[in-house]
Image (cartoon, rainbow, N blue to C red):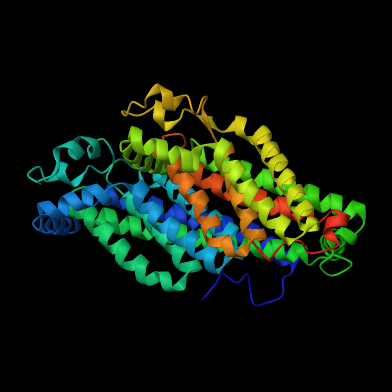
Length: 482
């Protein structure tokens, strides 16, 4: 399968709703029920199976190589980083090749983590299986991690459970990703035994549960997509959709009735605010624990190593080029207006209005959403002491979205839309600003990455809104897509 088609048969609303209400709970019950049976088995392991587990465990650890062990501990022991590799591959491919399915991919990835975490209490219902190095006391386990792992039940490996589920989602949206997902999962799974953290059966059970969690997630997203498609095909929905979103004159939305333009503009803004709020709620969640821990690990693993490389001299250059709004905003505005002026006064007026709409939209997003998602900046929470003169450049807490990065991203994409020859540098500039904020410890990686997405939405909304204004919308004033 090349992409997640919703179905081959025509959608029927009642049938798809009924199927969703019946099958999804049954499928989730099956995942939890099998997890419960595996938990029962983990506390009643047959002697022959335990003996084989111990032999395989000793055999894996007999291959101990200090360089390999150090490599794994450095790059592959952190579940946050391991998950991020798969999540980035899935979302990156979907963005480049299947952009229409970005929302579905994001929901499937998040749902996989939630479902996987929900099985924990079932697999540990009958008790906690001890770590293998407790049963095999002569196992050469890293002393630091011995103390950490000993406090956590070994069955199943949550690390591998979630990674397996994410790999299932990756392969569903990107079939060729199988050739990356399989060896990557096999390597990480083997490393858990090699490091002494888990028995082979801990890893095997985690893979089974992860496969079920991933399959449930993609099935759920597929089925919900069918319901949405069926709902869209009803007569009343089609008529409402056509009135609001289908232009009476092709490529001239500004010629539509005022009510239609007002409704679609308001709905688009509501969608922008709602999507940003949902994304912020996910990134700042405290439950389920596996998702919260994953995000925390990802932030800590990226923010502090970058912050540790802070230096006064390079900081001045980086700040001047990428982080100083008094220089970056005027530079982008000058490029946008200068290019537009060369193309004529009409385009100059269009560009000026688009800039105004961009700043107004960015302020609306900040006013409505930033107060809900605030936390101390990395520069004030880590072991690295940032000079006060630099901390003062970003007063107050970090927020999602970050106002500076969001506006910079939106302006860059407006520039790319109006001046296609600058598209590549215009796309790269927000990414460099993103890295600069991490360099200064001014934003958390997950918040900053989400802000890039919100900035893209702000630019798209400003361009969309400009086309609803009659004296602008009567003529196509921008080049294709950002």
